[in-house]
Amino acid sequence: MKKRVYRFFLDYEKEEAWVNVMAEQGWHLKRTMLGYFIFEKGEPGQYSYRNELVNGKNQDYYDFLESMNIEFVSKLGCWAYYRKKKSEGPFELFSDSSSKIKYLRSINRLFILVTLLNISVGFFNLYIGLGESTERFLNMGVSFFNFVVVMIMCMQIFKVERRKKGLQRELHIFEG
Image (cartoon, rainbow, N blue to C red):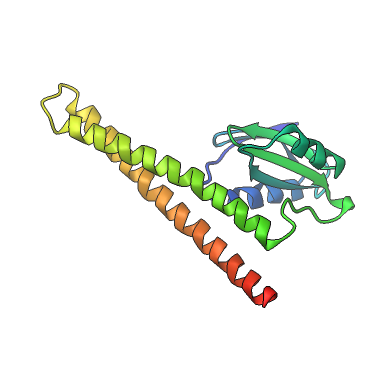
């Protein structure tokens, strides 16, 4: 039996936690698209899931994960989902704070790029909308949408920065 769920997340950790709650209920992720998840009914609590930004990962990385019995589940753009049987022990993609900090930096680079793109497009549409264009209403609407996306992305950037700073504090405490 399959289950299709529409749910949009801005926070990748909340998304991952939700997929793991679904797995605890016996719904195993088969595929994901933007805001659309396909699950298949199975044994409750059989798998643990992780998601990851996979920009720049090569085949060696995927081969390494496979050698650790980590199964690739789905990929959408630059985000991927993996799973591992719970019976094989804990499942983490990052073994230490340093690698997690590096990962959070890469996530923020992506968020900053999306933010800058939306700022540029927003101001461009605002400029056109304030002119004598026949599509002024459309341009102003798109501009408003771009600026809303910018605000949402800024909140995500600050959230990731807080996580990164917390890890840096922990790392500093452990190192010295």
